[in-house]
Length: 296
Image (cartoon, rainbow, N blue to C red):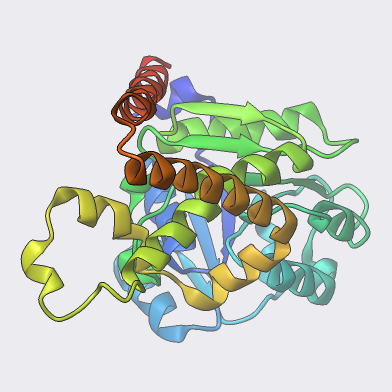
């Protein structure tokens, strides 16, 4: 665990988490692990709130926005983008100048523009996206460990205070993330279509294949488990994410389909050399990716 002083993150501040599901709960656990003084949680799910409070992961719990938000130095929105926008519109009177807002939305699109139009004067919204998660859903699946060694993406808006951007970066590093990168909303959504959305589509398609039957479980080993891990999916949330990044995802599905068709053709034609080159290229790219990830 990174030393909280070395990270530059101010653990004496008050942090509010809006949305206490898997990701929001993981923030609560992570922030508590590094000694954050006061954590406020807001979620309509009373069961999740009570569990987090009883476990000592949060200090105050509320089912809706209220005056308590005025005490927050940092607010983390762990909800879908439309829920975040609606919450801010309904509760903007509770955000005071100097407060930093950030989010975890998987697709950025025009969200920042909509948020900016709602922000009270002096409140700064720093779009973010932790590349962290696990299968399942809800607070019961939350874990501080999802941030260990993870990447954290920041998507700053024009006019963001650099000190506020640094504050969110410091939080990410304190939680255990290994690398923080800044990109534009367009680049973020394009990369996410390939590295996140497409793998989720492939995992669900593999499990939904007509080849799946009652005997399949007896033939499952590491490769099938790894390839289908994210098929245990929050369907309503991911449906929203897929639709909000439709064009980029369709483009990546087409590119993947072309690669799959290329291999299918080589297999049908018993093109040994072509298949070997295809597999060797994949192995080399995978090794390079793992090496670059571990060497950061």
